[in-house]
Length: 271
Image (cartoon, rainbow, N blue to C red):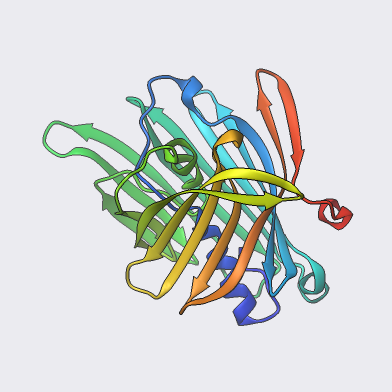
């Protein structure tokens, strides 16, 4: 998300999508272990004001799953800009492992070329193990390099988070493709914490992440009872809270049945 009326707002919104970063690549013994399909709506707040809203979807496919994100400005920002951001991440299951194979980020309504797209061709051999070739475009520039481990983008990273939240892993680094390169983050599980949303108390798992080369931190609260879906995300820089992302509503699909939960009592959240 990079919608905003100022550079500060753009940076803050862009940073919030990184807040889903955590943990190691999951392995699966069966497709049924994938996260349930869902549609979730989030609001980005700065200084108590909603600046943008984003809809996230997770859908099962024939050989894996894909996620989409649709972001639009809200409040005063919507009066100044009409930016639209649409993202899609495609993943496959190969030898019980989830692998990102395609990513597309489309930003319209802005005077700069911010579009990103790439594909990853994975192969495995006895000598080198898992290796991938990344080929694509980042903001008008060619992307072409090799990777020797599973990699994620700011959208698809939500999948390993949801699958691995129950594991109390030691602090570790994880790579994420952002702005045409891999950035490294150190993540740590801070244990259980209760939070209140729309008058209801939830038991959550709190995850902290920090970019290794910058004084920027994020805190993510995930609810095990809701398939480890994030309900709140805070972005901090130089010890100050910059933005908060809150879950407004979510619909889960399980065996053909849909369950919808609301996390806000403000009618404006559903306009």
